[in-house]
Length: 252
Image 1 (cartoon, one colour):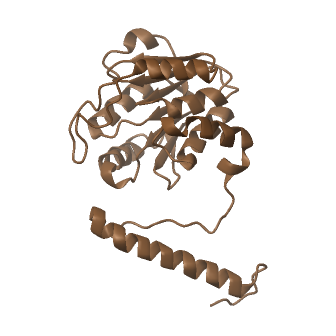
Image 2 (cartoon, helix red, strand yellow):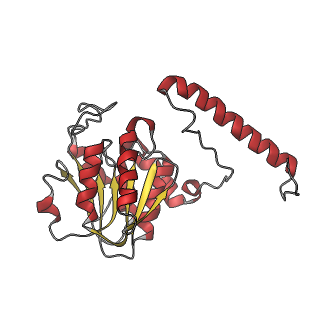
Image 3 (cartoon, rainbow, N blue to C red):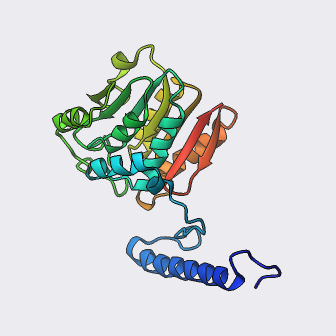
């Protein structure tokens, strides 16, 4: 198998790769029956890198355990938001979480951010449209006061939650404001499109837009739209697929 000597030992590396491939194939085999996944285009990704920064970063690790019941995002995707919020802390601009639900993603970005205001937005009455797997009565969380109280209990400064249909009814809140980080988690094609069209004009240079649900089976319309703007705005943004259900855009 190897024409060279691996520093960790050829036999050990061979076992690790074989186990990873076997687990990936077996998992995909069963999932293909449950969700009708095309095995020629999809794969269960098991990396040979073991380092998990979401565990090593103790500030994030402890905060995650305070908010994990408030988000559908796993620790890996949540850490991406935390990381970029922290990395962009030097920029004097704001942060926006579109589709906050119970607020977990917004809490993470607000906690890591020391410069600017973090805005959490949701309809608090479910999705704005029906599409494929998604219906208007899905992801309904009506208690905006829960989010307000959680912001207080977590002692998050400069953090605000807004009940609104984005972007139709938010212009009065964001007139003249710019953003350094935006998380879009709205699940459907048209909602994703309208969110991007609004924030594209307000994102600062070196600012970041993170699309959730990119490549996730039940939300392939999000991937469809993001793939369109990858071509259309390739001179305006750099695009990074982190292969964990997110696509990251960095404003040039």
